[in-house]
Length: 263
Image 1 (cartoon, one colour):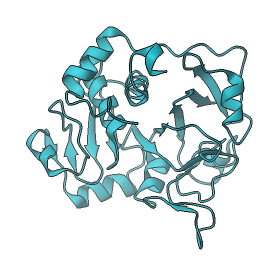
Image 2: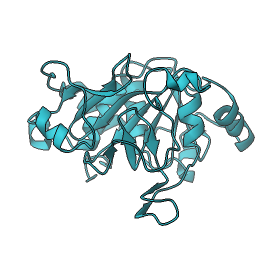
Image 3: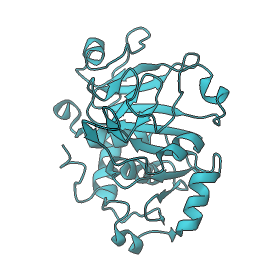
């Protein structure tokens, strides 16, 4: 894929997310957020200059000096526009419905209705793999207007029929079950992986293919997914990053090549 698109998977996912972000929106990103930060800052440099994002762990707003760092890194203090203190962050994250327009999240697992798991793979009492934990995910997925999920490695252990531990509610059991059970409207909008871009069918809320990266087939996606992915007709090929997007990404957003060195 890197050969066809002349970019790495991390760069591609950053571009795809950036295209969907809008001017004036408010966002929150977590600690392990290279792609998320790149997407927000690329959008700010291209078509959404008044979009603002805040570091969940650090409270820094719009940290951008052309270098991608962990969002909790103290060096971001020198290049951010403002800093929000912890009580403010807790109020916004845990109590304000739809204060944030979107969150961009990663996960150990995601299921067919967009529920995510960042806690563990396998039984909670004896897991095969532990993740970072809940880390505010439940509040962000429940209270943001929408969220995006970044899954750099698309395989059956990550795309599962039902997550082993549901700590990030998506569309729950599909249909209207999210709002029927008392959660605000919202949920996942897009999932981006190294194989394609996916959304959720409006009625059933099941995950479906909306585009495939160059050289990827529907059969390949289905073989690497632990549930039947919806597909309507022949999915288009994902639009490759433009020369302008790549120039801005590499010169103004990620000047040290963090995304180019990512696996």
